Image: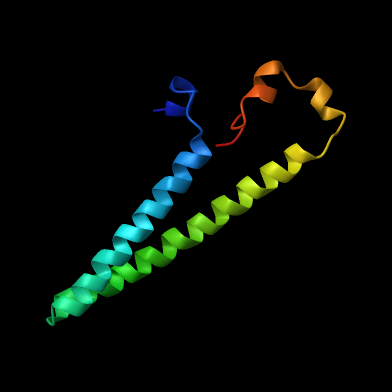
Length: 98
């Protein structure tokens, strides 16, 4: 749908970060509830799937944090490339990150 082109005012890496954190927390809470409250096999399996999904979202969160950290470190160094950036690239901290 190319929403990043339609809604350029949003910081898409931050939106992805918030989505990962929210999903990991929700899956973790529901998995704890499923394993602790119900004793049938289906609930235990659902809880284990939830823990697996939490792990996957946590790994995605870690990768996003690394990408944002690289971006911030790159922005701190003063290079000759800054002179070649447009005004939009300098003012928009999320420019070029998808």
